Image (tube, rainbow, N blue to C red):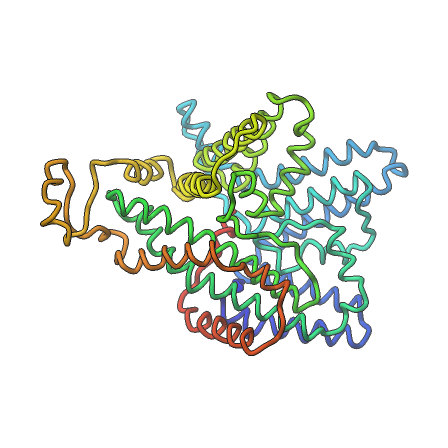
Length: 485
C-alpha cells in the first residue's frame, strides 16, 4: 500500500489509528500491539500477499537467533557462531531474491553459457527489514538489545510507517517508546505535527517529484539522443526527483508515526546543502549511513589501521552500499565513485587544504548530480548516453532568439532552435529546476520546521494547502523510488 493513495489516507490510516488508541484506552496493551502488527502485515501484503510468509519467516528465524544470542550459555553454542548463522541467513535470503538473476546473467556473460534466469520478483522492503534485523542481531551479540516478547519483536520489524523504505531502525530506540505509558494516550499536538509533516511530504512526492519524474523518464528511457542542455535537464530532473521523492517519503513516515506518538529517527537533512561528500552522507539516508558505518566500516577496521587500510575500508563499504541499492553494475559503479570520493576527501583533509564555501558546494553538488546518472540508468549504455551528451560540445543547441546576433557560431557546429524538445517543455523544466534550487538551498527543511512547530494560522494554512493540493494530484499510482531497493 502506498502512503500517497486514497486507500491509505482515507481508510487504512484512520481505521488503524482509531482502533489502536481505542484498544489502548481500554488498557488492552497487548491487544493494541497485536492489532498494530496485523495491520502492518496487511499494509505490507496489500499488493501481493505472497510477500507476507517471507517476512514472517525472516521475523521468526531472526527472533529465534536473537533469543539464542541472549541465552547462548544455555544452548552450549558460542555467540559468535549463532551470530554468524543469523547474518548468513539474512544475507542469503537477500541474496537469493535480489541478486540471483544478476549473478546468473554475469555468469552467462563470462562463460558463454545459457543458464536461464529465474526472474525472481523482489519482495517489497526486503533490503530494509533485512538490514534492520541484522542490526538487531549484532546489537544482541553486543548485549545492547534484549527482547523476549515475540509480539514486541514483530512490532519492531513490521511497524508500517518504516517497513517499506526505512528508516533502518535500532531496537533500543523504538521499543521503549511503545512501552512508555504516556504514548498510550492520544497526543493532539503530535497529531497536529504529524499531519503537518505528512502533508509536506505528500506535496513533495506527488506535486514536485512526480513532475520531475516525467522529464527524467523521457531523458533516460525514451529519448534516443539528447543535446547538451537536454542532458543536463535530464540529470537535474532525476536529481531533484530523487530528492523530493525520498525526502517526501521520510516526511510522511515520520508524520504518520508521530500520530501514534512514536518518533522515528531523522533520515534526511537537506543533503544538497552539503559542502563535501562526507557532509552529504551525514545528511542523505542517515540511518543507512549509520548502518554502513557501525556494522561494516568500523568492523572492517575503520580508520584505525593506517591511511591505506582506511581508504580500502571506505571503498569496500560503499561498494557494499551501492550493491545494497540494486543488483546491477551501474549501482556498483555509483558506490565505487562515492567510495573513491570519500577517500579523496579524507586525503584532502589530512593535508590541511581549504576551499571556498561556494566552490565546495558547487563541486559536491555536481559530483552528486553526475553520479546519480549511474544510479538511475537502467544499464551502462543509458548512462553513457546521458553523460556523453552532458559533456559533449558537438550537440549544443541555443535559443532561436539569439540566431541573428550569434549566427557566426554556426561555423562551430552550434545549432539554433528549441533548446529542450525531446523530454518536455523547456520553460516548465527550467522553472521547476530554479524553484527547486531555491527550496533546497534557502528554506528550512521539514525537520527544522518540526523542531519549532506551533499550531498557528500559518501552519494550518500550509497543512491544508499541501494536503488538498496533494490529494488533488493523486491521479495515478506512483511508487516511491526507494521501494525498488
